[in-house]
Length: 314
Image (cartoon, rainbow, N blue to C red; front, side, top):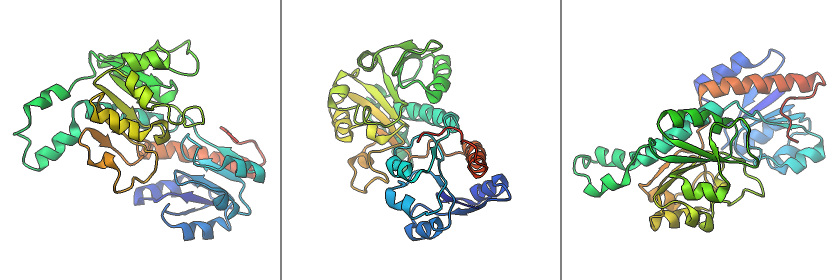
């Protein structure tokens, strides 16, 4: 049987794939940029190991023998679930597999935004690091003594909460329902936005959450707050975000995800030194990949053997 791993692989990742794959499964790799190779490989594929580039109806229909679409990660908004369901192809994700990596990246972006890491790095490399504007003193800060609001309280937020508290932060959270075992204080979204010095997004992109951080939401935020998004770009109205940065409502932002990926060369976010950015790689570590491949290949085995796969979402 054959699987297609739809992502560019490094030598280290290729070695991990070889080590993890069972002997009954051949795994072909395909960079997301190579559409022709993808269609060729899908013609004989039993399993699609999907990462980020959309698995559209056309992609799914290019695989007549497809038996499973396995998301490497959590969010399935990049998979045409209706088409998969019409074909009778199970779609699974892997909650928790990348939580530690995303939690650490979220913390990194909070710190980088609060300490103006992007601006200071550029200034230092350009020889201007010891001639900074005195006003930069007014645009930096620490997590200690600040309130951090976590929007969504799944695995990533649960890992972040004790770390933020250990650094001296006060942690709030909001979610679809209160969590009896939460180590943070509950607030509804409006109250959380109004109280938080840092707002960090940790929830899926759905019809209900699309564009939830819009102009009205930014207007409710505490002046001088920081926004961090390692969840999904579509949660944020980027034009409203830029306006909030321009008018000083927001001090800075740390972003791993964007409304359209990859970012267009003319995206105004690229020109800002108050925004720290990553190219949707908060999840990407060797440790995450090891955990992910173990789940993916177990689900391939289950489907092969007629057993129900774990973490089925459609």
